[in-house]
Image (cartoon, rainbow, N blue to C red; front, side, top):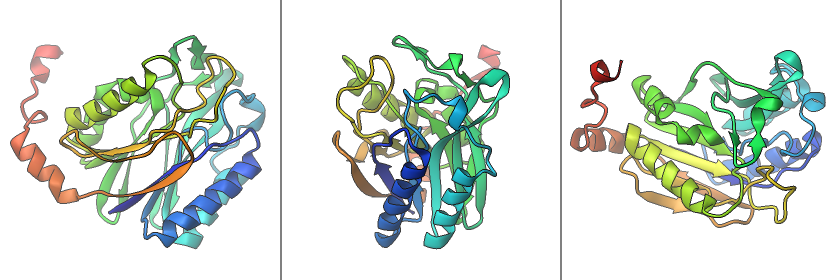
Length: 263
């Protein structure tokens, strides 16, 4: 399966960002991509007041993404913000396209490194997977990558890969952590991990996670198969479904788990 990682930089205007999603999706479709993955906060970048711009999944921004996916014959995965309780929003991944309609609300909120996502964002409560041409893929968002349970849940649900959308915070050691964590999660669950982040916009507003780029595709054996630098760029990658079975036969970490010990 050909997957496109769309490492762009979004701004505060949802309509302008939707046009970027359209432009990059068409480029990916022209390159033969079946799935096009955009970063977290594709609807509007962090540092923007979220509650006033949040829209429901049947609102104009999500419908715009649906139209783009249908027009290009691709499955588009993009980060947006939907209304939640107590004046907060949900940090939502929309996955939509021919035969696919799903959403995932980020479970693990980024209350770390001087940023408190939970002040404005309500946590999700369920994992989500999608099926594209018979291939099952999990959905995850940014800080989720620090929690191996979610990626194992995807594998237990039959997924051979996880699509990870991020707007990774900059700082000392953060790039090393990003690459290490993505590779570790692929190994934990023996799945492909297609990890796409916002490109590095340069100087950002303090602790707000505006992105560092360095999107990467990692195989189920934990090796990096393709990667980008910090600048906006489109990465076309391939996911080999059969390789997952071969790796799981050799590295039986899922089969060798001892849930009886950890209950």
